[in-house]
Every structure is written in C-alpha cells, then in structure tokens.
Image (tube, rainbow, N blue to C red; front, side, top):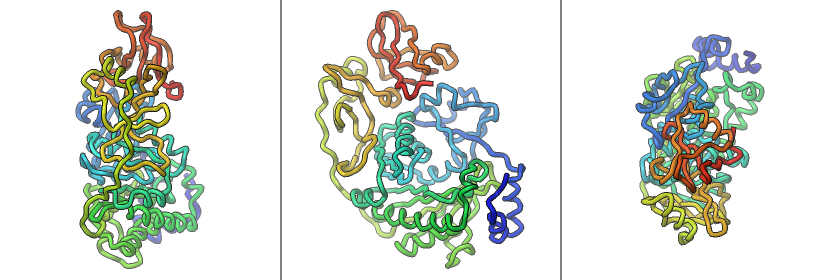
Length: 453
C-alpha cells in the first residue's frame, strides 16, 4: 500500500519507535476485520449468536458487536434486509457505546450519515425518548434515512440541516450530542484509497477548523450539564487532542473518562499545546493494538446543571379514518392514535418529545405509517420493519433459505396461504421483510422498488 508522502515521517516524529508497528499495518502485516452489530430492537445478541449462520467472534468493546468470517456475506442475507443487524467497522462501535443512551433521553447525532452510531444509539433507547439524526449533505442524508427505516427505528427524526440552523432552532434541547466529525481519515487508510489520496497537512488544518465550527454549534444544542461525545477516525493531534483542548478552553467543558476497554489507549497530552493531563482521559483506538481501524473518542461534560429547554412541539393531526380502518383490520391492539403528523399524503407517528419542525429540512419526522389514498391507506415499508412481527393479523412465514424469500426480495409475486386476503407481512425466519397484498391466492409484492435486489 502506498502511503501519502510525508505521513510516515510525521508518525515517526510523533510516535518514535512505536510508529513502525503502526506503519506495518499498511504493508501487509495488518488484518482488516469486518463486523456487524446486532439490532436489539429485533433480537437479543445472545439469541442472534445461537441462530446466525455466520462464524462470529465478539467485539470486545461492543456487547452487540461481532466480527464475522472472511467467507461470510451478511450483506446478502435476508436478515440484513430485515434490519436484524448493521454492518459496521468495529472501532466505530466504540463512540456509540460511550453515548450510553438511556430510554427517555433526547439525543442529537449531528453528523450522522450513514447511520452506524444513530442506529446503535436507537437500540440503547429501546424506542423511548427522542433521537434526532442529522446529515448536512442531501445524498448522505437519504442513506441515513434509509438505514433508520431498515433498522425499524420509530423514535427518530431524520434531518438534513446545517449545525448553525439546528443551534438556532433547538438551543439547550438535548441531553447528549454525538459529533462524529468530518476528519482527515488517517485511521481509514487500510480501507479507503480516497483517504490516502486526499491526505495533506493543509487538509488536516482545514478539518480542524471545520471541527471547531461544528462543535461551537453543537454545544448550543446541549442542556447545561449535558454530555458531548466527540469522535474522529484520524490520528492527527490537531483534530483529536487539539480539537478537544480548544473546545474545553472556549466553553469550559470538563473531560470524562472514555477508556472503558483495556484495549483502548489514552490520548497523548504531549501532542497538545497545553500538555493538559486530563487529555489522557480521551481514548485512542490503534489498528496495531486491536482488531479495528483508527479511532479517537472524547467525552466532555457541559458546565452547569439545568433542565432541557421546552420548545413546544409540532401540531399533531387527528387520526384519519383510513388509518383507523387499516389499524383495526390488520393491527388490532396497536395504538392507532396520538402524535400523528401529516406531510402531504404521508402519515407519520412522531416520537415523544418531538420538537417543533417548522424551519427544518426534515426527511423523516418519525415512523412513517402509510400513504393516504382515496378511502384507504397504503401501509409504509417503515411500518412493516418497525412493528413487532406478531402484531400483524396476517403474515407469510418463510425461512431465510426458502426460494420464495429470494423471490420476494427480487420483487416477485409469491404464493399466499389459503384463506388469506388483504395486507400481510412477509417474514424470513421470523423477521419482517415488508408487505404484500393478497388477492386470489397470490401475494402481490409491495417491497419498494428501490429496495429490490
């Protein structure tokens, strides 16, 4: 692997003899490991291990994370389509774990695409509380929204906003803010040619300035006494210890311990301007010390104590009869009223504590329930993936290996059980893949075209 000119010498100057161990990772001695993270909204990790057809090895710093074997292809398994797990670089699971999200908290993931940390945090909240997942770049925001849908998350609002506008609209609103900041990506050199090609000292300085700007907005959205989780996938001190040092100086934040796993090393105060000893509380994940890529994480506590800001909420809509009829016929016992939002002909259920949404670019204001059509409701794919599978009156139960499962994921019609008609969930190994509509003994496929294989 060809490393950027100047990178190796810089690391030798910073690390001394230890740099040879790091650099060896890029000369064929390192082993890149792939991992997945189980979705606790769908299945407990221990039960997944019992059922999964993969060669699994636990990720030491993420109880729901597992390395999989080089011959495994979990992205092609139907359970991936069902949101049973999320494929994620193992080191990247650490920041989401450190968020330690609790049911009922309000959390902002400010730079959230493609959704790894957001979906991890959502699992921790157990569907209770509010998660705002934001991404400023529209195409990446669409991917984020799709992953929120696939993982069956009902308590998330997905936005495509600038940090400045979120700070204006939602001051002091959140208990915790996660900033996985855009960075120079040195920790991704083993997997990203683009990161190697784009590397330069000028880019590092640019990233550091951008991080300062993003964090200055992030702290405004955090309540007094709230927690900021800052992370990067770079080794550069200017973007790691330096960014944390500058943030603490500007806003008076206090560092808290981030090294919860013995494989994590502390930050290096000697790489900062001040040499502040508390910077050793930050965590560095080195690819020559663990089975993962490079990562840096800091926990910072906002000064003061205070309540979350009460900003009111959106204007909720009364339940339309089309939705009430659908819920009564196909989801008996499922709460059909409360916190409903109408966006055009689309109906959503907003999370608890949903803030006012006016003036924000919102991609997903909660759980999409369906599309209102003339005298009927077409149920949303998001609803199929968020429902407890046993909630639906009708379902077609398939095994993951069943040829009909593959046919359904290709968008084809499949045979329906005798005596059924109307809407039904299609399941693979007990996990919902999407809707079909049964008529004349055939299950007409309603998997969105963009999700078909």
